[in-house]
Image (cartoon, rainbow, N blue to C red; front, side, top):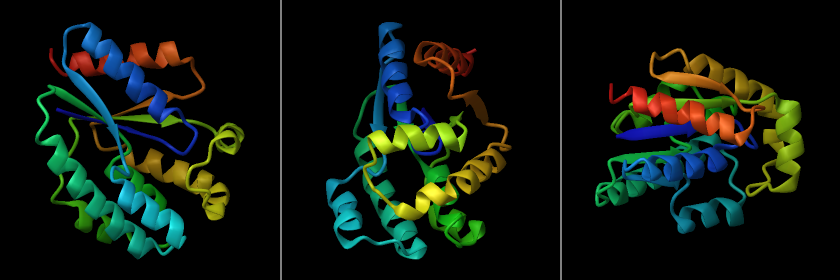
Length: 186
């Protein structure tokens, strides 16, 4: 079972992915959290080359996702928690000018998550958090956070996404996310 955690930079995806993994394992449900981008090689290529072309990024992220999913297929955990997935590619690259339909077509072979958790956070709060720990340092993304957030909200109308207020405490978010995952079993 795939659970995707999405949201703009600084929304708390990694924190939630790790705490959800721990909570599910504590309940006897085997879970593993992992993140995209997955491969160090592709991450470094993007960082070193400074690539900002949305077509190149979409294709690199899709290649990384294929490698990631191949690795996931070797795992035995019942639940895989993804810190970023397809919606991240759509949200970020579409706000850089690419057509959603093309991005979706590049990613259509990949399995859809059974649940997507969108951590919604006002961009002003995200900016404060990002300044503390910005791994990619794309200067454009700071200006685009509002558009990216809007795109995530638009994507969340798929019937399989819940939106959580990322200004809530980590404990509250973990409880809500855990409840949503457990609801999939009932």
